[in-house]
Each structure stands twice: as structure tokens, then as C-alpha cells.
Image (tube, rainbow, N blue to C red; front, side):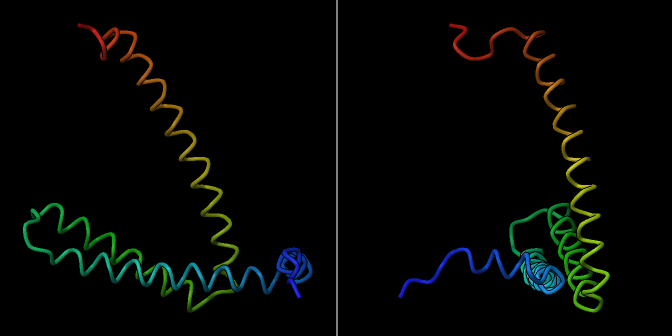
Length: 116
């Protein structure tokens, strides 16, 4: 017998608190795994000091986020919603600025490809 694809959606709508908790725990686990991998990558050979420091700092921030979310998943769900919202606004603003700069550069420089 085939399982209905609407079942997870029904569960998510029927129990939004459990859904938010599972999402928060999932993001915490993802942040922890990613953080430990980034810390491990900071010890690769052949990288410069700047790249190693960037990997290490990024990994430590991810591990910290994962620990905070795992320790307080109830308030973590509200925080995740706020962070995702702020990220969406900031990322959108960044893309608008980047597109305006790209347009100005294209107008100032003329065609960059196929100018032969």
C-alpha cells in the first residue's frame, strides 16, 4: 500500500511545536557536524595562515551555534526564525547592491566578452 505524501504535511500543520523542535534539533546537528568538519579542514596542509584561520573561526562559530541550539531548542526555534528572517533581508540587500555595482561596471567597461 502506497504511503500518502500529504501525511508529513498534515503532521507539520497539526503539531507545529513538534515540527519546530525537530527542525531546531536538525539544524543543531547540522551545525555541529559542519563545524567539526571545518575545524578539521583548518589543519590541512598547503593552506595559508589566512585560509586556516578562516576555516577554524567558521568551524568554531558553527560548533557554538550547534551547542546553543541543542541546549535550548525551545528558544532556539524562535531565534532560528529571527535569524533566517534577518538573513533574508540582509542577503537581499547585498544582492541588490551587488547587482547595481555589476550593472555600473558593465556600463562603464562595455562588453567584456566577444570584443574581438
